[in-house]
Length: 61
Image (tube, rainbow, N blue to C red; front, side, top):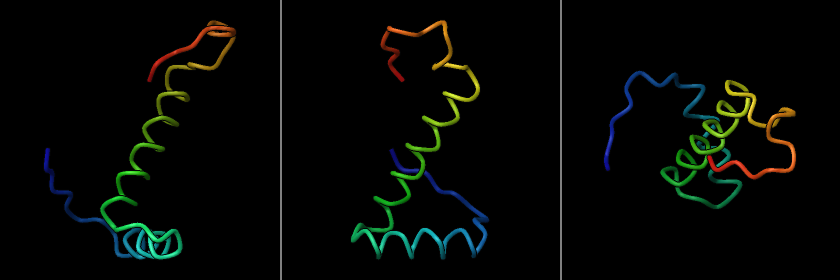
């Protein structure tokens, strides 16, 4: 699937470009990685996936 994201602040793009160069990844791959990590963090925070209710059980994200 292809999507277009508009109005990304210049400082955000600059940071992603810097990280992608440091990690020797393409800009596209770096953006995907940032999105994947951000989504996982958001799910953990929003739904308390790692609280006592899931202790000892695996939860698929």
